[in-house]
Length: 280
Length: 314
Image (cartoon, rainbow over all chains, first blue to last red):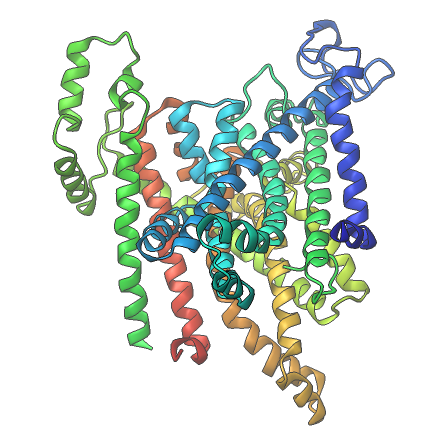
């Protein structure tokens, strides 16, 4: 609770939280409240500009852009959340196992992680998409796996440093071993870093989902996601620039709010650094 | 210094070896098998068997790997599943365009990020820092291909200052080549810049906290002298290593930028290969991307040590 209160005290983080709540509400409730079907085709209303019937105009098939944007936000945020979650689960598991056990498990695990470091993240993701074929599920899987190495390395480093703290030694002296030591002493020590890192992953995942969608390797039509909408709008950039611009703004807004929260969290969790926006 | 460089190079070798293993097994974990994936399930069984034999999928796995590695080391990356042509020459043709785009993007990133990063770091928690940091945060969320689309609309279609899409090799016509590369380079460079601004800013903040800065100030050195002799001098080595990471981000971003600007680099054939499930091509491309990335990071590490004796003497 203390952390949340401290986070709320940081102005930029407050802005981020408000934006994020707005976006989440839109994504969760929006599709239920909007009267139009995101995939309803109306050829008579192709490329219509903004009007009272179509707030943000329509696309090449006469589909309502605002409705698709709202439905797309559900898809994009869902994909981002699940891939960040998958990356977190895999990364924390791998990092804790290697860092806690040490020895050859550590050496072997970290060498495998090093390998993935030799290939830029998005390219790893594209390679995984090639194996399973493009879809929303593949996007989650591909991004989650692609984020794992960085996360695992970070967690491992933290576990190694936490393991040698005196309070862990004290616990050992009192007879704590294995799972108990892990649960009561080591895992709480990595929570702050994991929180910040998972928040960062959410931001990466939103941009990467958009990239995969743009390349035609993400969510497939007729389903809407922000990336898919940018890709679909690209062919009509002169006739209807809003088809590309609007979903792009949505991505930027979402990532901006997440980064504000992430930077705020970092400060809120680290009492020594009373720093503000934009620290690396 | 030479010893340190040699040591770094030797450390990179196992990484390259591991990369080759990873890429080799990549094709072998395809659900089903690659030949069926390529031809479809209704394919003629005789043809499947013949192709399996031709690609060597029937040999023991170790033999397959050794044979494949031997070929790769001789520059033979196999045969495309689709066009049935050798993969290597197709990729080699595309490398210069991708590297040219990388250089352009790197240049833009540096020119944008260094002054703003230093400014934000030196004016830490003051007004110009807040402004720069906020813009940076917005920039972090802007996909490169989206920025690219906007740049294309403004500068190519509305103002007609620059060509919208295409490529001319630098050796053929340098002026045209540079005109073609400006928009994609700016688009990709602006993806890397926010990341770099944050790193430069926090590095400068750290340097300002070092005891030698207030000491220099106490000695009465002018601000400019402190800036060049202490801040820049200490920023440089840190910076070189970040460049290695930056190149990774730029390489990844280049795939979408190449698609947008119809730039004939490796990214174009990568996407083509993924859509067509041409695993021989994907495998080779991932390997080439990986090697480029590892080599650039290696150069960055050695350059860092050359600039900062504390590192090579550690």
